[in-house]
Image (cartoon, rainbow, N blue to C red; front, side, top):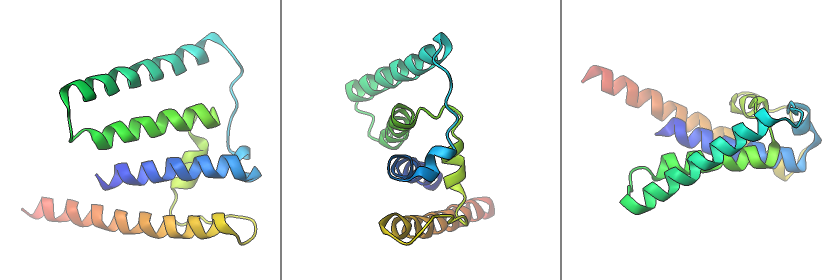
Length: 133
């Protein structure tokens, strides 16, 4: 559960970095427009809509986190067009803060990295207690 929230937070952080900073655009590999790219994006979108409708019809409350993860990935792909997830993988490293200058985004990144480290600690503690019992 903690890992899913880490990925969701980093997806939104990557979107902010892509929109507001030029550094984020350097990590994105732009694929040329092709039928493969369109089919891949449409398959992801159709499966998201199918999953959303089935979750609403059957009212799966426990699947809200997975639905929000899937929705975040779709929003990330729609905004950044980063099919290789390079920017996301760059941002998932909790010990990397390579940002130019001090500003709102750097404060946001520092707070986000602290939250990620906290969630990682909680995840490892949960795994440890699960193994002991």
